[in-house]
Amino acid sequence: MVNSPQRIPLSMPTFAPARPPRITRRQALQSALVGAGALLLPRRLRAAPAPDQLQLAFIGVGGRGAAAIRALTDQHYVAFADVDDTRAARTYSAFQDVPRYRDFRRMLDRHAGKIDGVVISTPDHSHYSVAMACMAAGKHVYIEKPLAPTPWECRELEKAAERHRVKAQLGIQGHSAEALRVLREWIDAGAAGPIESVYLWTSRIPPHRYIGSDSLAPAEPVPDTLDWDLWLAGRPHRPYSSQYVPFVWRNWWDFGSGAIGDIGVHMFDAVEFALNVGFPTLVEAEAPENGRFTTPPWSRARWSFLARGTRPPVTVHWFNGTRDGQVFRPREVPRIPQAVLSATDNGMAFIGREGTLFVPDIRVESRPRLYPLARERDIVATPPARTLERIKGGHMQDWFDAIREDREPGAHLGYGGPLTEVALLGALAQRTGKPIRWNRTTMTAAGVPEVDALIRPPPGHG
Image (cartoon, rainbow, N blue to C red; front, side, top):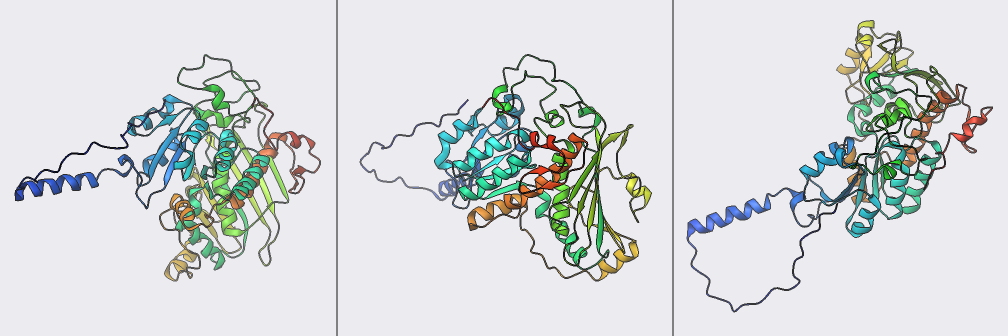
């Protein structure tokens, strides 16, 4: 599994100096061109990192991890780890010079002194064990969202980042987008009036990827290319099934938290950044019976937040999935034209007393629209002051800069942990079918004792 680097002798034989041959002008020019070509080699192919590069390791290099690897070739790659050789094959083929491992712990042991940061793009249920080990080794971490599928794991990861003094960034890419800052500046300037409610909707998870079950999936032979025990990452053992991997693991409560964990964390980032809502007083959810092991194919949920200073209380309405063959979205949203709403599979709407700010995506990556459009024309003609600092280079660059500058990144775990916890309260309401009045101190829900067994992962095998 490991590409062993070629050994280079520590000393070289010495020879008596000889008179240098005469070099023609043409030979000198050819030599200069060869030297320039060597300097232009891709950075990842150089034997040692350049002074301005970070030395990165990647855990999970198929799917989302592969996208990060393709985008970060200006950094130095130390090693890759993935439990699934098939999923990792394209990355391994494209980066044949980078050592690779199935067990990330061996990678950490072998390369500990060379790694600055680790990009973690594994399934949600393994974020906790992988990130804990990396932070304990003193490595900065970038963890794709959600931080974890349970509130307890989120709390423990947040404490670990502080204890080990590492720079940990949650992979909510929209947090560093300029459009999110525009949204907040418009809200702060009163473009829509005081915001009293927010609508969030997403088509995730699509029907062709959805599995609902009241039992474990039927056992299948484990592929030779997959280490199933490592993939389980300490969750209770169950036989392998292709109904778990790849990606469909998010339908199963032991491994994911459905669309709320997948997309809800992105969307609640926009809500928290723009409105500073904090923690809700009440979370309620409606979802169909779908089996005790799997997430629902569609759901509706509502988070109620208190007033903050002069800002009014806010109610956040959530819709996800597919119902009766159609994307389950709100039937109507104040001021948004029905044709626009019907054509938007993933959207956010911030409803104010005087207008509605609409974003047709999951991360506020495009400038918001303001309805009625007459108000938008006014604010575009005379935009509010730029009161918020822009992030140069994007979300991953913010993490790199935080490591170099010894500061917290924008989506540090002190922000990303509570953010994920707020979203996961919706999952608790889905699973129990009861209103969740969350006590942050005791991590309990008033009158819902069954939540106690759901706030942390079930006991596993390691």
